[in-house]
Image 1: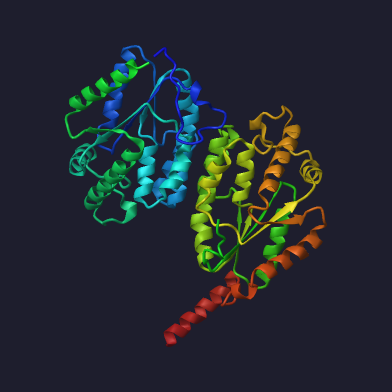
Image 2: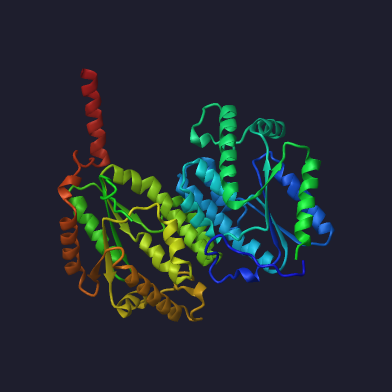
Length: 233
Length: 249
């Protein structure tokens, strides 16, 4: 970890920030609700910090600047798609500049519980232009690794229901009007999201992890891959 | 970038741009009063005024949480909200929409703050170009004097203090406004700005504004078909009458 490793940005990046100054590691875990993302991240934090490596965690809708307002706007479902998209980008940018970049500069391991790919996929399923999104998220640094925890929609339904006894409005894509039945809509929406992730995988080359398996086998795979990554100079 | 007319919208959008203190807000207000009096369907929209985004923006400004990137994105969010919820439906419905500042304000300010020009323009590429953009160009000194005359308390971002141009807010404001003016002038050809001489007196300028608008837009096409709604008291009376007539029928 002492070896300094620079980072690239997907596009222009952030004014006055140089990729060469960004050491550390940026590791992203992507996946739907119920894919085991949070469980796996909690394990990784524990594992890394026990072995003496400092970590910082980020995720969606956690910025000081707009998270509350974004939550409120979403409750009422009053924002149009471009507005919601830009609101999420603001939330991402605030965490990027206040948490991710300073942590990388200091050589920390940043664990991102979802990243720009979920934001892009959600918008693409809603018909937004991919080139527009790519320009918008040109501010994002290229991670050192992205793990997409892939779970079949049927399995996701089971996990979400056993945890919350209900399906989330947004995770079911109810705003899209795919079906008035939330169960139906959830399956269709998650299927569509997986297809978009497959398309994005071709551009961004992330590692697809079969997360239909037990928590332990996914943990083992992630630790092995991240361990190898940290060995690299 | 296509205009609303080129994109086959029935409505038309007129924007005014310029530095603070250039008098553009007065001019667009007088334009609005005239169009209303002519019985034209008109709607006025101001930069940075979306109710939904307001609390986040003011928190960001008050606590000085904004960077050039988040400053740009939060204003884009504000604009998108007004664009999607108000401007689009009104322009579809054949309104004349008047905008006190449009996307060019972001192009000028955000680039002055150091954001890459094509990133900013790309983010706003969902918006059509105005059918008429009037740029109010006053001498920098005139604009500065109008604003600074009363020695107002300049706000942090308004004075461009985030750019660390000077420790003195007034000095910083002057440098910042000068750079924004340069940005505006650099894009004025590309975006077909009609340059207005904002050093002239208000009345003379308004004559030119009205002339420009009526040359550019066939105003009689934008008249309300039905008369304007009556004031509330009279409206109540009319509704009551309609009800009686309904019953009779």
